[in-house]
Length: 109
Length: 117
Image (cartoon, rainbow over all chains, first blue to last red; front, side):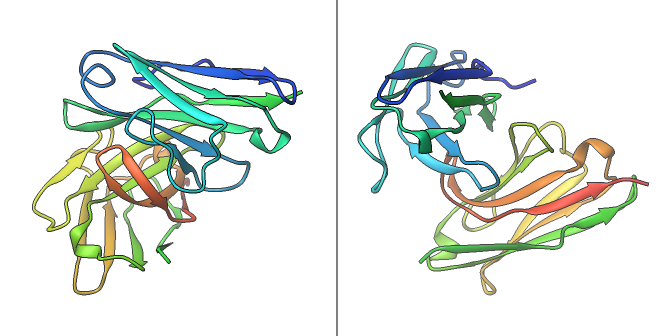
């Protein structure tokens, strides 16, 4: 059972803005940074957001992250067909472990 | 260019052992913590273990503690995962990752471990 809670699915039409939520607790999201990973079908995950709201070089500014209290969210604006993927949130937990969300499958309609 | 190349996966019987390796290149290996993350077929990502750059500190998920051992050889730029007492629920693609806590900036392509009789 994943420690972080994400909705199993999300969807949107091209050009729309979608958000994916990630809920945790005071020992993980509440006291540490949140990271977001994108996994395209059949490939290894890729870092999308680090330190809760920073984008690595090469990640389009259509992707943005935010954190408030024990929750975080990933927003994707100007949705494109190539954004169809699984998205995972992750955080360090003060119990000395890395915790992931269960993943959200994003469908572009 | 950072490259992480896993090897050692395969089919093993329940109760058996397997050692995964990850050959790293393109960065200063001994300065970076490394991790193993797995993904069961059709399931989400699960953190397995992390080791500090020097190898002095190791961390494990409760699901593998006491059965798996992470180690590294900085002279060979190689990360290892020794897996003992394997169970059916350990079946997964195992990814080697360059990491700092939950910050994973590079992932390998993964190696499949299947535990079945």
